[in-house]
Image (cartoon, rainbow, N blue to C red):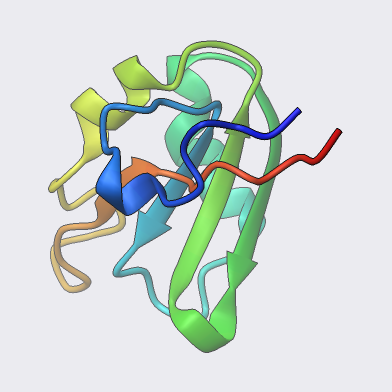
Length: 95
């Protein structure tokens, strides 16, 4: 099976369980992501790409509520500024 949306940026309405978290410091730890996002439901995993100043939160539930609540807010401190949150790109699967 091939997913219909190979480029999520062209289809922002596609929602995934994984949230992309941008504008975070390279020193951010996965535990920090877990603590910020866990009030919005169970999290399967959290990871940080320090070389790209972004991270990911893989949700076990609907990610929409967490994104709406946290996108554009100073959740890591006012000295860091607002974080950006979007839905992670949809992977391609071939049958």
